[in-house]
Length: 191
Image (cartoon, rainbow, N blue to C red; front, side, top):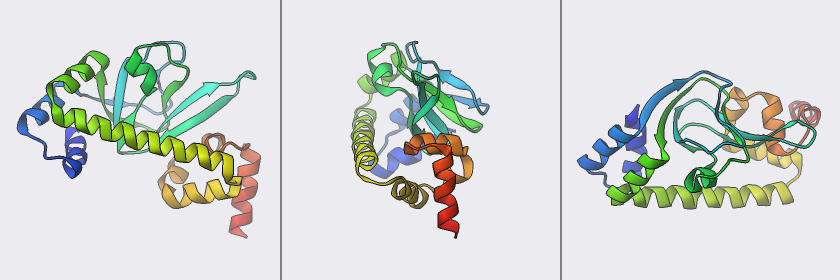
């Protein structure tokens, strides 16, 4: 399962044999069933995950006890409650598999070892962090400036695989709308 991660890094950086060996040593391959909470709100996140296949989400419970999905991630990419993982503080969100997922996971201690021992991994980690920050900034802007229909169309164009693999209630929550509103938008687009 390490091949996909190594391939992704190789697109940006010339990865050396010792960096590949470090990856294989520190990232543990795991297969997780769907609907499994991997990291719980109120607990310190134990792992950073790389999604080889499958879909995951970050969510929390609002004051009414409803689930609010704040992020959905599909292959390939890193996923966790990152600032809480990095700072080893209690998470404000849950990390859950939506579908069965093939994952590579790394502990905080091993992540620190990776960053300390490999300049390639440190550079790639910075690239991933900056890319994530740009994504979150754009997502915040979209939530503030686009209509619900525009947000749905943007998701449909950029990540059609999410629409095919993720339950509608998670998609609606992610888009900041009620499931009934999403159903109306989908019906209007079909007609």
